[in-house]
Each structure stands twice: as structure tokens, then as C-alpha cells.
Image 1 (cartoon, one colour):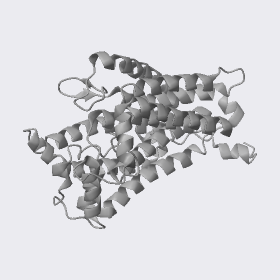
Image 2 (spheres, helix red, strand yellow; image 1 turned 180 degrees about the vertical axis):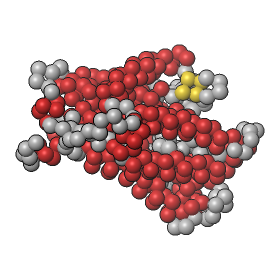
Image 3 (cartoon, helix red, strand yellow; image 1 turned 45 degrees about the vertical axis):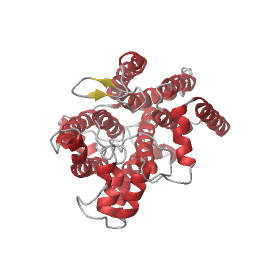
Image 4 (cartoon, one colour; image 1 turned 30 degrees about the horizontal axis):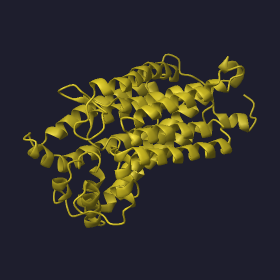
Length: 388
């Protein structure tokens, strides 16, 4: 039916999977992600040996683990990007159900690793953070609901997605994990805006977010402590933010030199949440600008390709995935330069972390699958009224 309505473009019958994938995938996005992972390994060589020494491990223990998990992540990204949007949606539904159920099991079987928030399952040899895998699966499921609501006689998908989002945000806030909750809420809000939500409704949602933040500030010591530290004009130089800010200032334009940085000896999370501070100190503003450019390229390229897509589900899902990918990078870097309150959130493909790397690989694989060139033509042809 789709071909009858919209027409088609020539399809190469019998074309092997890999050549077809290479011809249709966004190679710029793929290249940027590979470069980000390479930069992550390079920074890991600088940032992780001090932590390994403190823990009595081999100097490159964490780098080797990052390379291992990164290989799994890149494999997952490649395989996912070869799937059709329909298969991606089906797998996302199954993955969402498992990840959402895992959130409810965290209070019973989870651990906080001494960080004050129960977010992980400890497997002994590794740990799993369900919220990392929940993000891309939720975006696809919510996009499916919103797209279904646009069909004639379709279900109230926007209302369903709102209820689902509220349940997830509340569950994450109880961990507490306000960063992931905010990221999911933002991704859903972007999709809802693209799906045609009234501006008045979005303003009302923003008001609810402010009220929710005020409630969390009054009732969560963890949340209040982060906000108070952010609003305090004086920076304690012995805190993580203090060390990171000083390192960024010391790095200047060209950096202090490879291996000469000192922040990695002071920050326990130098290889994860504050990896950008290591990059700024040792390699300077040049590397930081390169990292920002790579993230911006992935987001902008994806959105430009999605603008030409006719299928509303693909447009919504791809937009949501691109949004959370870019905003997570912004949050991580914003915290390091004290533009945002402190929040434990990794820098995608650059920071150390098995769950973050593999879930990020799946998310970008989904994004690549949604932005591949397709044989149904582009939405601009409808807007121009071009006959097929």
C-alpha cells in the first residue's frame, strides 16, 4: 500500500546485505562515532591508570575493559543499524519490557556502589545499569505510540506515552536518578513537540517540571545538595567540580601535554563523569572543540536526514534518539564547566562504562537504522506536489 500511495525509487534486487547497508547508511555519523570511541580510548590511557593503581590493579586494566565493552558496543551498533525499522521497533518493545521490569527489581537486588543511589545490578565481573538500556527502548516505544495516534481511528498514543513517561520518571526519581529522569523527559518532550503538541500544553509541562523540581529539592537531600552546590558562587577546590574546573583552566588552548595532567590523580571519576576535564587539561581547547564538533555532526546529520523521511514513526523515533544523544553529551560537559548542577552522567562513547557503551551502541545503531536511505522517496516531494 505504501508503494501504491507514495511511489518508489529503484531498488537493486538481490543486493547483498553489507553493500546495501554501506550504500544507505550515514557514513558521516558512523565515522564520528568511531572517532569518539577512539578518543575515549586515548583519554582512558591517560585517566584510568591512577585509579587502577589505587585499586591495586594492572595500569591499563580499565582501558582493556573499555576496549572490550567498546568492541561489544560497536558490534551491537553495526548489527542494529542493518535492521529494518519494523524489526528495530519490535526489539525495542521487548527490550523496554525487560529494562522497565529491572527498574522495579533494583530496590531488592540492586546496589549503589557507595554512591548513594541504587542504580546497578552487580554481576561480580561487571555491573549493569538498567536505565541506560531503558532510554533508547523507551524512545522507540513512545514514538510508536505517538505515530499510531496520528492514524485515522488510531489509539490515544500521546496520552499513553505521557502515562508511560510519568511512570518511568517517577521510578527513576525514587532511586534517586534525576539526571536520567530529566533526559528521558526531555527526549519525550522533543518527540511530543515534533508530533504536533500544542505550545500551551508544552508550557504547562514545563511548569510541572518546575514544580517537580521544587518538590524534589524540599524532600530529597541528595537533590538539594547538588542544587545548593551549583548555586553557591564559591567553588570548593577540594571537590570534584573544583578539581575539574581548575584542570580546564590549566589546560588553556593547547593543554599541558600528554600525560602531564594532574586532575586524574585527584578525581575518582576522571575516567567516567569528568573525562572531559582530562581532555581539556592535557590536550587543551582544541580537543574539546573537536569532541563537541563530532557530537554536533551526529545530531545535525541525523536530523537533516530525518527531515526528509515520510514515515512519522521513523521521524519521531530518530529525533528522540538524536536528542538524548546530544543532550547527554551537553549535560556531561556542562557539569564539568559548572554550567549545570553536578550529575553522574557519562560522555557517550568517550567515558568508561560497560552499560553506557553498549546501550549507547544500541541507541546509535537504532538511529543509523532510522536514517538510512529508503526506497519510498522523500517527504519534500509531497510538499512540492511533485507527481510520481
